[in-house]
Image (cartoon, rainbow, N blue to C red; front, top):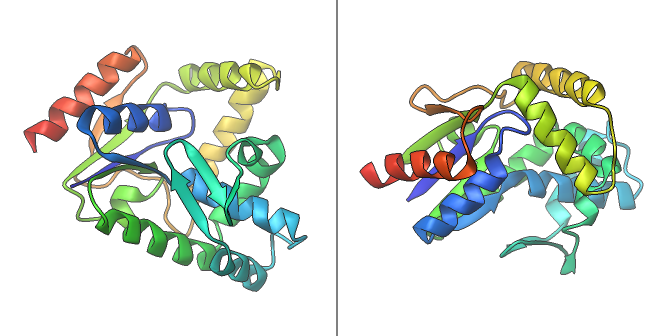
Length: 214
């Protein structure tokens, strides 16, 4: 069974997906980490982020392994490295690359064929797994999402003002929704969950209830 969770940045998708997968006994697929890993590999190789052909070659040549909570790039644990501000900025360019997306979608589908998974991202229910048994679109009020993101960055030693986080978030939402390839929109049959006033347990309870009903 495949469960997809799409939605905007800082809506709590990764945290919710991990927790839901644990409750269900499913595997968790962090698709954002996959694009970040390609971005890291491209940066290390000095590949220009506007070179579509070269980005595609990077995506095709690397081996990305998701093992538990770790992300491996050609056998190297890059779980921390892919969360750096530099990789975060680069990853949006990589995610917009048709060649990279082709490679990543193929890999994600291969993982999906291997068993029961909870997968999160921007296009899991619309593009990657349109026939998924249960689809969610997890969102939250922009101010709530910005506050969550600010706390997350502060915990990583990356202080930033709430105003800047909100401005960056608004810009990212606009780009994600307007992307020519795999725009961030709810699948027609997705269940929309607004987590603004909900605790994590309440969010997971809601998701789990819908999944088990399927």
